[in-house]
Length: 469
Image (tube, rainbow, N blue to C red; front, side, top):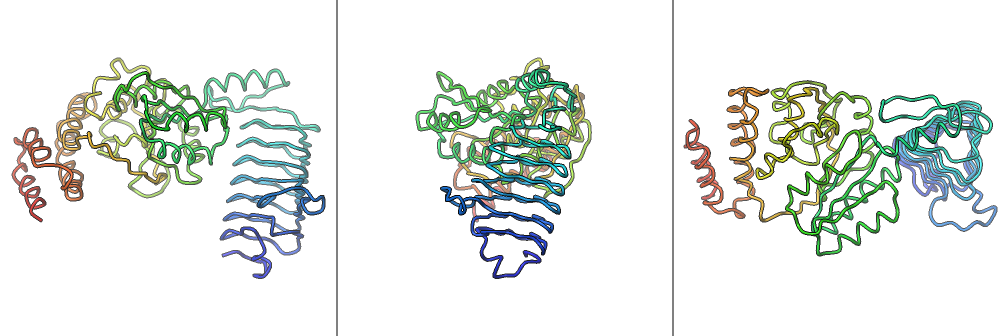
C-alpha cells in the first residue's frame, strides 16, 4: 500500500512500490519519468524534477530511479539532468541538493545540507558528511567531507576497520591495497551450463556492479558450449570479475576446490552455477562477513527461514545446526586464511563432499562459526546424471564424519546423524526420484554401508514399499 498521495497522482508514476510514503507539501514534476521502489520514504517539503523534458534531453525509461528502502528527509531537492539513480537503502538527510547525472550506491548516506553536482557516482556504502559539496566520484566504502569534498576515511578489509587518510595519495594507497584483498570472493565452478551461468552472473551483478569489496571468480572446466562467450560478456562489463579456463576437464569436485583457491578475498564463497541470488541478498551477506571476521566458517541456512545470525563454536554444534545441508556448496563461506592452513585439503575429493571436509577441518582449529538464516537463492535445477546420490549419502558423508571422531565429533554424534540422514533426507529423496535410480544403484549401496545398523531392515522395507507404490 502506498500512503499519503492521491490515487490519481500515484498512477502517473512509471513505478511506485508498496509501503512507500510520500509526504504532502512537496513538488514532484513529471512523475511519468520517475520510478520509486518499495518501502521508500520521501518527507515533505521536497522538490523532485527531471530536466529531460525542459532541456529536450534524450531518455529511455525513467530518469529518476529511487530504489527499495531509500529514505529522503525534509527539504531535499533533486533535479535529474539527465538521470539520477538512488540504489537501494540510500539515506539522504535534510536540505540536500543534487543536480546532474548522479548515481548513489547501495547503502550510502548523504549528510544534511550537502550539495551534489555534475556527472558523479557515490560508491556503495559510502558517507558524505554534512555540509559537504561533492563534485567528483566517491569510491565504494569511503567517507568524504569538505568543499569540495575529499576522502577522509576508507574502509580497509585487512583490518576490518575505517582508517583515517590525510590526503589523496594516502587514500589511493589504501584503496590499492584493498583492491588486492576484497572482503568476499564468489567462486563459481562451471562446465557446459552457459544459460545457467548467464542467469547466475546476472543475479550477482544486478546487485553488486563493480562493488570494490566483492570479486567474482569463474573456473570454466573446458566447456564445449557457449560458456566462454558468457564469461567474456561479463568480463567486458565488470572490473571485479576474473576467470580461468582449464585445458582439460579436471572433474567437477576438483574444479570446485580449484576455483575456491583462486579467490583473493578475506572470505571465499563457493557458488553453484545454477544457483541464483535473490534480489537484495548479497549486501546482507557482506554485512555478516564484516561483523564476524573471527568466524572460520559461515553457513547460509536455506531451510530454516529468515532470522538473525547465530554465532556458535565447535564441530559438534556445527553438525547439529547444519546436518547434511552443510555440503550444499552455495551455502559454504570460508575464511581464506583458515582454508589455506588445511594440510591435506583434497583428502575427501572422491567423496563428492570435499567441501564439507574443508569446513570441519577449519573448525577443528578455529571453532568459531556463524549460521546466516536467509533463503537467499532460487535454483536452476541443472542435473548431473553421473552423480550417485546413494554413494554420497550412504558412504561419502558418513566417512567424512568418521574422520573427525574424537577430533570434535563423538560416536553418538555420528550415529545420530547417520540415522537422521537415512530417514530425513535419503528416503524422502528416493520417494521423489525412484524412477531415476535402480535397486542396485540405491538399495544395494544402502545394504553395503548400513547392513550392521539396528534399523537396517526397517529402512530397507520402506525403500521396497516406495518401489511398489
